[in-house]
Length: 168
Image (cartoon, rainbow, N blue to C red; front, side, top):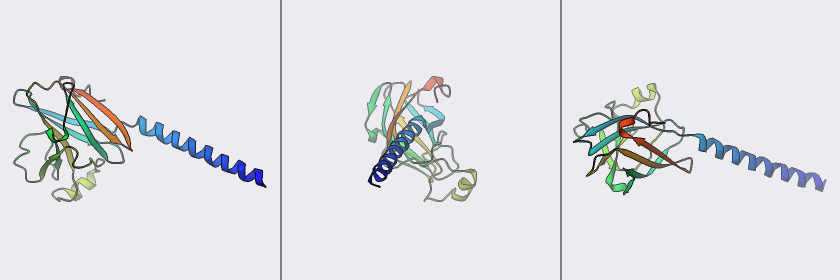
C-alpha cells in the first residue's frame, strides 16, 4: 500500500512537470504583439505604431529602443483609444476619446471581437485600440519593443521602412 502512494506521488509530480514544460513551450511559441499600422510625422522624428494583442492574456510593455538606444518608459507614450479612430492615423490629439499615458501605465488587453468593438465604442471603461508614440531627435529607422506576456519576457523588433515585412 505504501509503495502505491509513493508511486502515485511520483506520477503526480511527473505529470505536473510535464504540464509546466508544455505550458512553457506554449507561452514561448506565442508572439501575440503585432503592429497594425505605422505613421511617421515630421521628417521621421515622431513615430506612431498601432499595436494589437493577438493573445488571450494582457501584455505589459516594459522597454522601447529607438535605433538601438533604450528609452525610459516616460519618453514613450502609450496611446489608448476608446473609439474607432485608428491609433496609427492622424488627428489623435484632437480626439477626446484617445488618451496618452506613460508606456508602462496600462496593459494592452487582447484584441476585441467585432461585436465587442461595437458594444464598447465610445465608452471610457474599455479600450478598443492601442499604440505607442515615440519622439526622437534622429530619424527613426528601427524600433525594438520589450514586453511581458504570460509572465515571460519577449522582444519585437521592427524596421520602419520594411514594415509590414518586419512585423513577424
